[in-house]
Image (tube, rainbow, N blue to C red; front, side):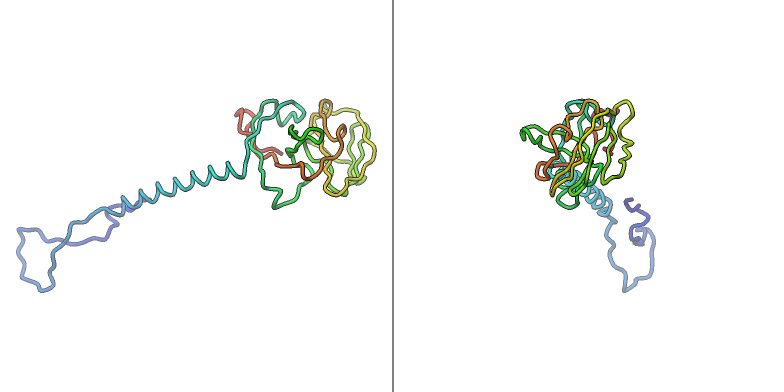
Length: 206
């Protein structure tokens, strides 16, 4: 909050029609100016401009807008949803099971897929009639509604170094690692973070 006039340093003045005995210490008084209010407004506008510039830089260099094509990640991601992916997060932290990531399609690097990470390097994975087991533990997948499950199986496989097993949430229609195999780490280039359009789907991606 900018300071009010009453909070500015006060200076006493002498009315011109009042007479007083001369005082050796009396000095001319300059009129009270309002530099503090103008300076405060200038600083506020500067801070706003810096904040806007920083936000633009973060979006341009840390996040990339992408458009979803297809329905393999229903119900969270719908066809033509637009979202931001974080392009740098995996330079500072590891990929976690359950992350929704964007990667270059192994069979055609010109294409990009968006899927969920199911198994990490070193994990032992198998799928028995749609039920996923990682390291012999049944994987509870609340993100897959019952109506989107299928009865496909996948033989037991151990993920090699830098290999990740990807699956879509809409299991019955998803083309994923069950078809094209595990995905190499160097093909993964972003983590899905936030849907911004359409507004009905807006929110974080979990």
